[in-house]
Image 1 (spheres, rainbow, N blue to C red):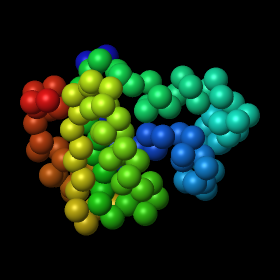
Image 2: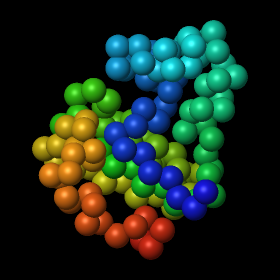
Image 3: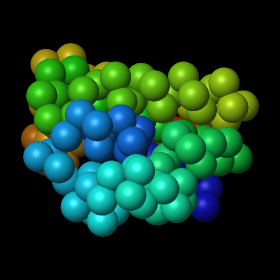
Length: 118
């Protein structure tokens, strides 16, 4: 692994479970909540796995109503606190799916995270 990119991700799975993000998508993915499946959360939660030892890029639409942008802000802060290089990109006016749409080119024009200064 040479870098990690989170695109509007649920980067705190326990928090996403508690908030019911995606209509319970976190619990469905992991087979239950963090109390029922602590081992699964421990190995799948991006924030719990820090430090990663590789650069982290968190990209999020500023108007995302499905996954709060705070999920990416918290990942960026936690990665930096753990000693990883991290870059947070919040695209103003964009929604949850901005990074996946070919008409949104701002993110694609950014230099690769591995070349960005810490």
